[in-house]
Amino acid sequence: MTDIPMRGGSAGASGDAPFDAVSTFERHRAELKASKRVWNMLTLGAFTIALGLSIWISNFYPERLAEGVPRIFEYFATILPDLQWDQLFEGRDAQGNAVPGSITFWYTDFWTYVELLLETILMAITATLLGAAVAFVLSFPAAANLAPNGWAYWFSRRFLEFCRGVPEILLALVFVFAIGIGPLAGVLAIAIHTGGALGKLFAEVNENASDRPVEGITAVGGSWTERMLYGVVPQVMPNFFSYAMLRFEINVRASSIIGFVGAGGIGAELNRVISFYSDDRVLAVLILVILMVTIIDLISEDIRHRFIGKENF
Amino acid sequence: MLKLDKLTRRFGDNLAVSDANLTIPDGQMVGIIGRSGAGKSTLLRLLNRLIDPSDGQILFGDNDIARLKGKELRAWRSDCAMIFQQFNLVGRLDVVTNVLTGRLHDMPAWRTVAQVFTPRERAFAIQALDRLGMAHTALQRAETLSGGQQQRVAIARALAQEPKILLADEPIASLDPMNAKVVMDALRDINRQDGITVICNLHTLDTARSYCDRIVGMQDGRIVFDGTPDLLTNAMAREIYGAEAEEAFNEAATSTAIPTSEPVPARVPA
Image (cartoon, rainbow over all chains, first blue to last red; front, side):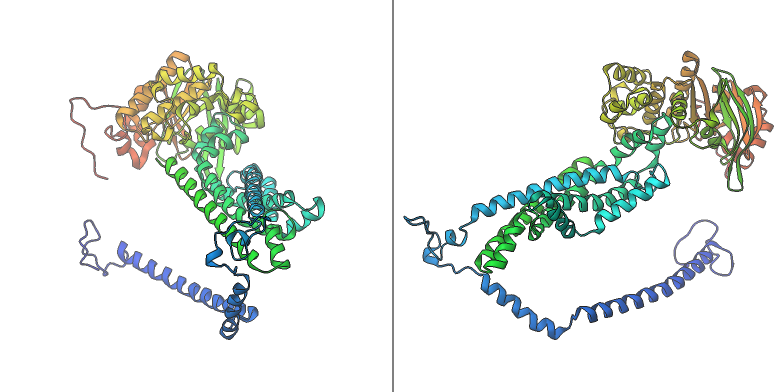
């Protein structure tokens, strides 16, 4: 401890003076470590119990896993297309029928799928925009440091919690029942969930914003709205944008599932081919969905990085 | 005329400002001095109601500022511009928009939301910037400027408010001597040419002495000195500053006195 070269008063006073800075610090550090140790043990114990319980309840046992895994491959075997090398690129014959074993035969409904994928993406875009708009407005009263009063804070927080607490699929079911089968129900369901989830994230970004510009706008006589628009929004906008793009990626995945309950998008088709045929058409749709999600993710990530990069010079 | 009557502010058990009585005629340049924690900032923030008083009155004409609420309070704040130690500009907005925020109070709501400013308002903002020699930075982001430049933009924002009173909370404490002088000169010009009352918290004594018509000394929340600079004796100043006296008297640290040829007095070790 004493071989660290030190300048100033504490050099040489290694231990014998009870009140020097080093020993005070060491004592404090030891106390802090001891108090943390108890806490760590408690956390570890609680974690172990929770893990044990969840394994027991979900029946996550090795022998069950060993039984189940091969069946996953069995299922995949039933949805594999029966492609023939020599007929792979055969087009349709004179009667307009596709030759079995060709890609054309496998992807007979290709353009239907593409149309539905497009619908899925458009659903995600609309839902993200709607949800982000709600989240934007509510994120200011829902930020502890910016809320105009306790009531506004409480109501906006609870409302956002409700919005993200209800699962999308449940909301979609309700909307399908209320306004009928189709993409509108899906858009509304995803938009509500997005509003709740983004609203919380936006509010947290707002809570990290510096209050100096806000104070500056207060001092020029700005109203609450003006303080938010001029003092906070310029600080938080890049983060809002980044979170909204991330949510868009999530929403593309959500809107490809939500069709299972009739709320539009590729999900309806996926549900149909699984429950009616369970053959190579399932794989045909799955491949397209995975391709779409991957491409959207890549594009969105690129935009996000470019945007952040530009903001930071 | 601004009149403080028994103005008091408590934070828990701590009296930040205690029973302050002060009458400031229009057009005066007042410097408030005192050690850190003496209540200078609290007093200034009470004046434009960034902090609410616990007791007492603030009278401007016949208006009791301490009782204003909502729209009237915002109107008062726009009449009573404030300059901060840390400038409090919106770093991500460009300079001219920062200055234009000084006009927010007079704008209809839809224009503030849509951020639409008229050519006349823009011209007004540019003139305010030009007066402080900052017009060339108008389209730059405020955060790209140096501290001294940011403080000059903050003064331009205050000017855009067309205030009756200008409050400055340690306006030069974060600046080097050169910029400190530029900023203090600008404040004095505004006081002399526009007849705007300037009330300024200052940490260094020589700055207060050379720029202000009147000096108010604070100690532990109370006003312990009020008079012209020549009435403030060294002994009085030493008492106001207490343990921080050496720092406050030392003109080399955060001061507007730029040393020319005479040597800078050596800093007394603490």
